Image 1: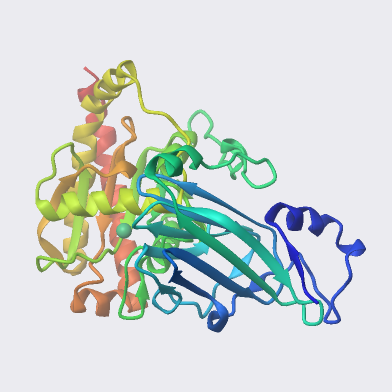
Image 2: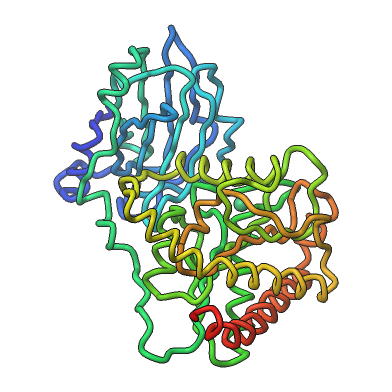
Length: 410
Ligand SMILES: [Zn+2]
C-alpha cells in the first residue's frame, strides 16, 4: 500500500529518511524529482479544481495563496519540469494561467492563476513504496472573495524562505574602483519572458549579458556584475537593489520581448518615464511588472512621500546622464549595422529602471515577435556583435560622462 503524507509531514520526513520504510528502488531525497507529464493535470471537477502532479520521487512541498490576481502557489524542493507543457497540463476554466519553473536555486515553484476564488480543501503526496514514485493530489473548492482574501498570504518560513539579505550579495566597491557596470539579463527561472520560434528571452538575454561581461572585462578596467548568472528568478526590485549594493555607475537591462500588436522590430532603447511615449511601450512595462508579480512575492511596502521627494532630486541629476547613455547605445548599435527600431528611443514606467541615482536603461535588442529579429537573435555572431556595440556605448558614455560631470554638479 502507499502512504499518504501531508505537506509538512513530508518536509519533516526528509530528515528522518532512514526511519521510513525504504522503497525497493533506492530513493535519494536530495536529488531532483522529475515530473511525469503524462500523469500531471489541472482539471475542473464539480465546480472546483483537481491538481495532480506525478513525480519520479517524493519532495518536500508547500502550498499557499496570493491575491491580486488570485492565485495558488506551490513550492517544491526540487523539480525538473522538462517535458511538461502549460497547455498540456492546464485543462480548466477556473484557472487562467499556469506557470512553473525554478524559483531560486534549489527551489521550484508552480503558480496557478485563478479566474474565481478557490481555496485548498485537501492535499497529499502519495509515495509508492515499490517504485518510489510520488503523486501529489490537491483539491481546490470555491470560496467567497472575502474568505480567499483572509486566507491569502505568503508564509514566512525559515526552512523555505531565504532572508531578504540571504541572497548572494556582491561586494560593494572600494574607494577608487573602476567603472562598475550592472548588466541585467531580463526574466529568468519561472518567468521565461517571451518564447517564440524555439527561442526563449531569458536564455538569450543571459547569453548576451555574459558576452557583454566578457568583452568589457577583456577591454580592461571595468567591473561587471550580472543580476543573475544562471536560470533563476530575480524580482525586479532585487535587480535594482543589486545595482545599489554594488554602487553601480550604470545599469542596463536586456530584453527581447514579443509585442502583440504594431510591427515592432529592431533594437529599441527605453528610459524611465511616468508617462509612456506610446501605447506599446506602456503595455511592455505593464507586462514586465505583471510577470514579476505573478512569479514572485513582494514583501516590501510602498515608498513614503519623503523618499519620493528625495528620489526626484536624485533624478534631476541622473536624467541627463541616462539620456546620454541611451543615445550612446543608439549610436553604437546603429554603427554596428544591427537593425534599429523606427523610433529607437522610447520611455515608459519600467520598475527595473527605478534606481533614482544610477543611469538606467532597458534595451529591447530585438523583438521575438519579428521574424527578422528572431533570425538575428538565433545567430551567435549577432549576439557577439550586439555585445560589442553595447560595450562600445558604455565606454563612450564613460568618457563623455566624466567630462560632463563637473558641469552638472555646478
Ligand atoms: Zn522582457
